[in-house]
Image 1 (tube, rainbow, N blue to C red):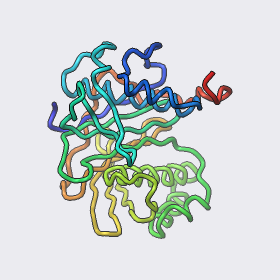
Image 2: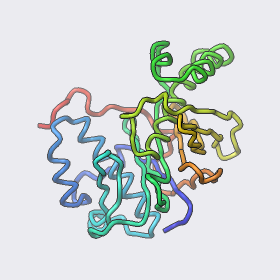
Image 3: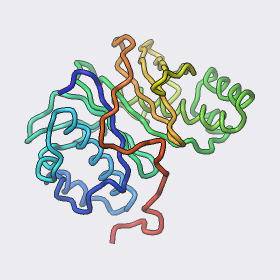
Image 4: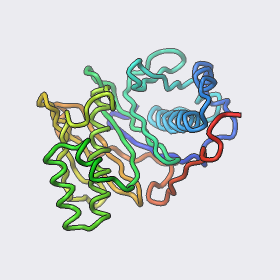
Length: 260
């Protein structure tokens, strides 16, 4: 596969109508979901993950081929890959939000994880949210953004920090089971021509996770890499995916909360 991490976005509308692209184990897991939201998110994450993995290893994307690529989960919830029942030598991170999902695929490392990705929407966040989930330094930055950029600056800043934390906690493979204040985010506003800007996440144990962030339309995308990897470049965008800047948030499960 490619040696550098690559990322891809997909929208609900790109998913096939049928389920032949799932493996037997994935289908069995899907059958356990009774709530439409959980079912839709499960399918969307697997669709983007399989499509991204196929692109990374030069694999076809027909149903039969994708069914041989499995997106499974550790007990912690972190995803991992099996190809024809054999553990793949790669790391994958998945995230979904409001009808769109993203995948980040890269070479496997020796630690808990090598990379993490998170997708969020710029949406209202309260003073209580900032107070309860962000560190003092982060909260001060969010308040400063409101003063300099108005209400959109507040909402972007609060959601961006939340997203960056999630990306770093995915590298640690603990997710939101950990207190979000155990990691602190530092944001750089200097965006490159390709839309990416640098960020750094530091844990209370002194681990430093280099990363990148970008805003496309109403979506915020954050990438974190494992501690000790220096300052790697942003991941390359794969072809054949959804343009985040043009994607419209949606909640298709509204009005039909349970599977019929």
